[in-house]
Length: 462
Image (cartoon, rainbow, N blue to C red):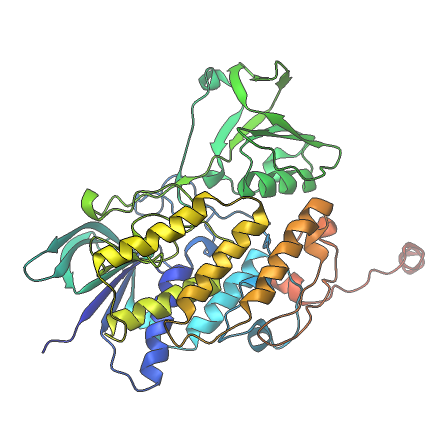
């Protein structure tokens, strides 16, 4: 028999998790399919692969990344730690609980570099179209080699969609916004807070992007930051200079009108209004259609497309857990593709999904959402040999994190947590987060030299 083939679209954290899952099986002596991963960027890492570009990239493709300068983890690293590759193992030292982007990117790369999975990835290659033949039970991918300007097709027995869902902006319209004289962008195109120094800034949205970009701009010198919410405010205790207002109704030049009747003048607007699940390479009948939530419909176990289980989606949920959740999904998907897991009937799958969807609809406070996603991971981790980790302790950390943010949105990143993988307590960072303006890996990992007192400097000059 011909060897089975698996196609993976995307080499971000989810796609890399799938590659790593197959390598783990291979190291145990198991026979694995032929695997090809397609990545439209020139390097792996997905969102963590920072690009200064906005709009379109080198080859005219829409920019995938929504990452920006000065981004630090907004959740404890102990909540996302790989259970088979700890931060201690990677850095050979204890580090703080909230690393900046370059440090997390280095950690992601560290695990994947242990294996030769880069050989499976075709960079600068984008999926243009997917079809499925009901008679052969195979997918055909139409692909563009961007670097060589070449179009070609390949066949696969399984298709893993790991292209993420924080890339295509959801851009609302407000009457009069077209006449706003300042900068108007979506969070997807935000690349750093520097340009907003000394400006009055309006952010429309009330989720993590609005919260983090607002605080980043405040930290880097914005004159004022206003967060405009549709339904509910973020609700933390904001410092002077940051405030929340109800939704904007319309604009008159640089003046925003809010639905409580108040008005205010702004220099720039950032739409922190979320992202769309967008899969232009998939026909409608294979396309996941969902809003951002903790349990998208039509995905059995949050992964297998119910109408066609050979089509696998990774990382499509709204997320508390990230890297370790992608792992549990990828290990389970791998065992299905290896024939070690047999899925129940379509009707049984539908019933299982409905149970989760009902619970999802009834969720209340953030703590309930943490418990929901924790239970989801418990449900799927038992279906593979992914190394177990203490999910209950991670859930406790998530709840403490939520409380820390409510207590002080500016200092929660100075807190430390204990790893459930190694038992190591995180180190305190050498500089408080609000005073740390350098997010480089070198600065983060190395204690800065103490500056000489001013009087010593003066004596040297004399």
